Image (cartoon, rainbow, N blue to C red; front, side, top):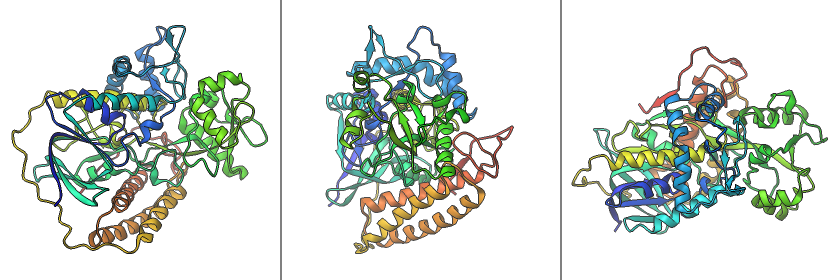
Length: 520
């Protein structure tokens, strides 16, 4: 017998956005937070850099807004950007109230500069900001009696009626292997991004586009999915997996070098290593392809050794474990898929076009990133829009009764004995996306990718219909569907802008608009 749960608010995802929204919601509401893995496993926990905010008296909101608009290649929503920037200082204050202790120097925030910023405005906790935020938010959540945490639960599909009203979700329990019904008056998607669509990524295994795919199937507007940000510097080492080398190293003066020790960023942008990520990633990608290099190098060894160890303890320790001494040698790095700038289209209150369905964090398209996300605006977006989402829900009306939801029907499927099929299709998707829909694109490659991804989706759909559901199958289905949306979005944009660079359309259009996709 499967379990059927009823909560006022269902939060799907346990990253910074999900946990912050849970804390901000009224104590009078019953709240469920579901995590597909351990509560702390996700992109938020691994965020090294920091959170941007105007905290220096010499800085100002207009500068932060302009930097964000320029980095996003004028495709951002200025109202959303202004809202986020003006709310940033209070977001920092709210995090401090949960116990986050940002690094200070001489009783002031130890602010640093990252790509796209014209001032020092990135507050951080050494090089483990995300970890500190997650740990402290989770501690606060556990203090609240109205919040129930569910670990190892994977959402399958949203429950949306014919009137476009969301009533919760079907959720797979990884321990019991059963699908449970979670009925809710309000549902918040906080599932993160989709960078596992690519072969090389800085993201943990949880980033499979679940929320985007579920929202698409439910009829949500999905916007700007062609803009996948590739982080320029992921550690290139066979045992490093997805270990990110924070942009803050470049913010503190680290130089990008070719294998022969020569600098190269001066050939691409006057801002050198502090150019926006799309420019730096394309520069590295070009040098690797033209010269046949496996990687380039990032050098911070000219700095004082004790300062390096103090400022970047996480990076120093991990590199030491791999036999790399960053105090005395350059690190091998390559670009890797890092952040999904598009997502479920929302307003400032985090509402989607489906009634009672909200989206926050990387799964959402709030309009603040445009065609390229500026460094350290991501954690800021999580916190600011988690608060506005909670505020909207706290001020809204709730129905007295929960609707009757049919239990999940697994009577016409059978267990699969061919798990190798899932593994094969998963790898095929990621290879296609990396080779055909990567940092530099063309019409020919995109059209080839579309045909391949479309066929893969058909295979997965057939597999899904006849075999018993598993967490791997759920993720594969979502990954394939999200990849198809990315490809379709990339094909539809006939220009090069920000993170989307198409060799057949190297120029920007004078007038452009967001690509909005709606499930037909």
